[in-house]
Length: 392
Ligand SMILES: [Zn+2]
Image (cartoon, helix red, strand yellow):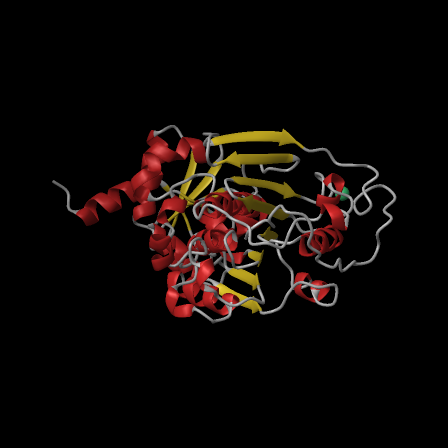
């Protein structure tokens, strides 16, 4: 039986080895494929720019997918040149014709002063926290990094904002903005699950921030303890948001947010609830209708809803707000089919979903071809009629 040293010597005599200066020269001129066969943690600490990572343990099973062309020039490397010698031998046995092993490996490459890439990766504790996302190919590490970089603005920390912000925070959306000027009232707690009895009288935005920070320290919460108005809407939206989750309960805010989001070009995930009925859709500027395509103007005073307290089944905002979080995550990740131009209705009594197609109106006063509204309008919230106002 040969010793390890003898075996290594023997393998090295059977393969081609190149030194670092030669590898750098090849890299500059003929651009061979550099295959890094080290372990994941070694790769994460730096690798030759442009290299692909195929750990030694998976080399035989994965190399065909990574390098389908068996005539390609392949330079295999590890830390010091030993594992890569065995890897080069294995590749030759698999039919790869032009394989060489980098003598001295990545350590020698670094010592010689050649550049290397430090990949952006999730730290170990984030890898654990988001492991169920990493296991989904559509999300994976890249998607999780994207979520951690993303910024979402929630209008309202009420019934819809509670579940939406909790799930977005748990999912690792890096920055959540919360706009709410209200305080926690005991009639909120039947559905606004981000607050609690001990927070009665506290600012809703502050209360939401505390709950989110306790849930996930990866999330930065920006609070705006103000009501959205024509005065502050450009400042708040101008902070740069990828997605807005609209949980507003009144039409002045809804119209103002619509016009501002069209002009700032930010998609809005809209949601509303009343008694047992909920609805949600995505207004994405240029790709689908906006709110004014559907309702160009607020209703006249005699048609306006009453300001009497609106009733709502406590769980309903949980369902609709979660649907909004789902749409927001999809938009941030660029996956799936968002609810653009589709209004999803939910009937909690019948447990039924219905979908309605929505079309963009070319004559829309805001997003149409010749828009007639070019400035913000602060509609006065007025009340009339016997029907109760939509709850939040
Ligand atoms: Zn429109």
